[in-house]
Image (cartoon, rainbow, N blue to C red; front, side, top):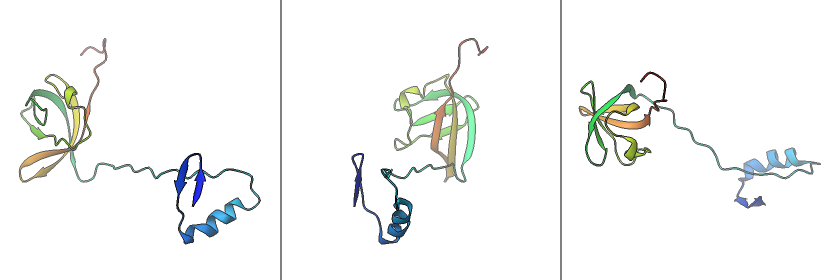
Length: 115
């Protein structure tokens, strides 16, 4: 195990030759950071639009073009921002005829932008 900057990590035996070779004769400190996981949208479809109406929990949205979206509570979103007249960009999957949102981003409207 290596302890550095308050981080405790366990290295596998396979990583030791790489680490020992990198540190040979070095006076530097090794900091092992946790991995960064980025999930890119997969086979989802994407829609940009304006919310016409929502249910109280903002888990069911209807856009001004009539499209309906379901936003599960497990989707990272500030549901209080998913309100009528808000422009959004949403990635979704068609699951049995229901559009299930996998990622949603409110689009900020800037004053003076003519909107």
